[in-house]
Image 1: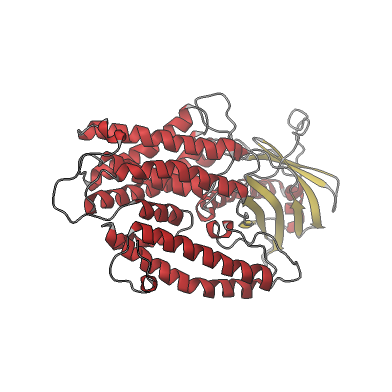
Image 2 (image 1 turned 90 degrees about the vertical axis):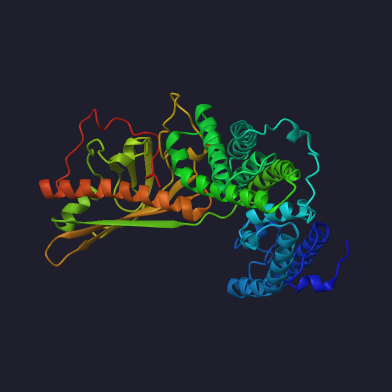
Length: 483
């Protein structure tokens, strides 16, 4: 190993794995020290290595008076530019050295994924240009991987699925984390590892590598379902993301086996995955990312004056059984609303199929605005499962309404525009992916309530029809619209 300063800016040529690893760790240490000095000494911000795993999150403050965050992030970004360039240069040269396609340099950027990518490049040796046959397998694992395509695929799928299943249970049941490690790193790395194991004895086609990657994720999902760790609907929600990343991992594995020989070093990646994935899960548990606050608005126009609509808003009657397919999957749906008291301080109970939301009234501006907090959220759904009742951790507080409101606007023609808004948080990552699902579900919940209020107001002129004694029995212990 020979380190040269020119390694840091010359993008042509190659660099060995030992030099790449040393430069990588040195640059990471220098950058952390610079970031820490700027953050803690210049801006009063506590800085941690976890900030690189979850970019954009600030882990507390040293001095609450020092909070010019826009300037802080600008300085941090400027500092990162030369390190980003050097990292790209080193990664391009390492990819050439180990015979991988240069387009894989894009894996240098995504958080969490780039950690595994760096470790992989530190493990893979220089690609030999010698045309002689590959040396015999150096790993006992290869001795029992069959040569035949079907048997090799079965071994690769089952072995990697066991590791992926274990990582999923560790994340969900032990650390109760639904983060990037679970939904990004596990499917990508399982897809890549399955493709590499399948091609460890014989070269495989792209289709074969993608097939074993897909089957691995399906086997992991089936295991979580059969052993009652997760319900069918949530697995189907996660499937597009997990399968997409597994296919990407399978394609990367295919590129590695296509551009590299010999293949006897491929299984070295498997133990590194088995060790690094639990570490990433623990890191997310030790410093969980900050959940964002999301907002969903829905509205309907009602052929009734605001005074009539208001009566149904504060306490609407029983809604008929749902016909929307969303609620037939087990997603919680609203049934009725009741209120105790009047004005700010009153408590509204919105009863869902899984229990009540408890909503203390914050603003009572009759007949224009009703705003309420949420002090209790029932489970967001009943899981579809082979078993009578399963209760994965995400049913408790991982999707929670924080506040809601109904706003009534008088229209020129005498009608009323009724707008319902929910502010909520969820603790599942990547946020953008799970927000698509939660926004869609909350919008359907809004429409179920708003359309019912519209029907009642237009048919009864806004008169409140009391529920029968059987219907308005004791309130469940607490409720908030499922967000």
